[in-house]
Length: 203
Image (cartoon, rainbow, N blue to C red; front, side, top):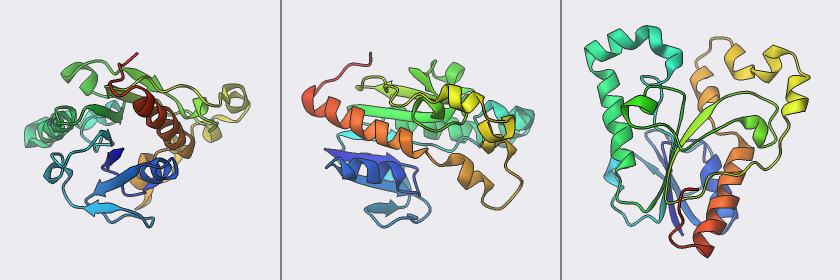
């Protein structure tokens, strides 16, 4: 399958799909941090290139509830509406199978409630970070390695590591990266599902 991983500079999800034998390409305004097929530029320029699937990670800065105290300013300067428009352009892309991920935020009401909310601890990472998935043409993601009990045995600053990161120039990058267990689950679940069920239903 020809798969677009939108708004990804790490190459983590792209590489997971390539490992499963798919033709996957990442796209971001930033260069890829790992060697592999990557389009550096605006993803809107390549949405019509005949993709079978897209997994998108649009910027959440203007959309996530964690930044609610800045929403009034973002609405006033138009940045929030631009982020909403970009999110919806991905939703409406001419691609039959789509997953868009974002933290809990305003798209649950502006667009619709997410198809699924996942946590890293469902996929082998003893950490808490709720992530919403809006899914079209794909089955829901299945838990692969539930380590909730192990996570709860850790101190709060360990199981919520991303929330306790100190300020730094790379903090936003660290917080935005897809956990490897989730990337692997996407590639395994959705790669197989699409090969065995060409027109999969969200279920």
